[in-house]
Amino acid sequence: MKMAIVEGRWTGPIWDTHLHLDLNGRGIAAAQDFANAGGTHLCLVHKPGFPNRLPDSIGAVKDAYTGTLELARSVRREVGLDVRVILGPHPVVWEKQIHTLGLDVATELHLESVALALEFCAEGEAVALGEVGRPHYPVSEAIWSAANEQLETVMHMASQADVPIQLHVEENGAQTNAELAALCDRSGLARKRAIHHYAPSDVSGSFTHGLSSSVSMGKNSLAKIMETYRYCTSTWTMETDYLDDPARPGAVLGPKTVPKRTQTLVQDLLKDLDKGEVEDLLHHVHSFWPNTLYGEIDP
Ligand SMILES: [Zn+2]
Image: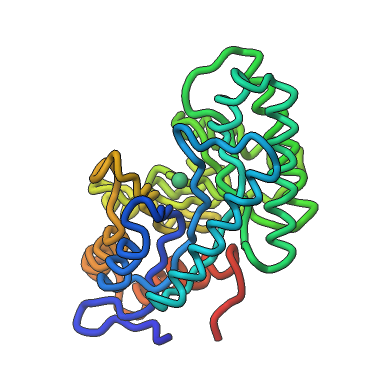
């Protein structure tokens, strides 16, 4: 695919690195919207069955993963997008299930689900583990410390399998990233291979502590990206975290957001850089970095 800006518009690949689809929601039609807006590549992230379809056995987890893989095949076939699947047990499911299954059973199920996701990665069906992490809301001290211990184990499993992970975590700025970086170092997982999902748009190394960012591309994200992209020490990509939840239409960024923001970013960057430099940056954001993390590099 050509990596060029033609008449002020990026004509190369456009990749949303964190999006969910649901056959009970808009499903394939949402993926078609993304494609129609200029999108070409998706990381389809496994959708946890909130609020009342939480799998309570490894068999149920396997069925749910299989459903996500099947959905990815439909999107490839019917829309023609390049879809890379990310599978894993959501940390909020674990926290909820502590109160129904108990801490030991919930943790065992969580770690079994991680192992199963890594098997699908080894078979080439999935490309990363996610979203894993820790609850984004206050929990008891006992649960918080169990969450961190568990996350270190999960990171260790991912590093042994040489699989990158997408992290769902609380929003506490650079402090969160510093703590995650320390967990990476202890577990043997390269910081770059730990991707902060729903990341703030500050992509500077002093903020990310060397983690990769899948930046949530809300309305105000571009200003901070423009301030900080020069100081990135790892990688950053763009995401919507589109939920495809029929109960909450419009509650999150829509599937056309990443293509739209990409074209606005091109306009902003062209004020600072020459065309070749902008093309190089866009090539990194929408092809080189995501291919490095989520699969083969396009020829
Ligand atoms: Zn998500």
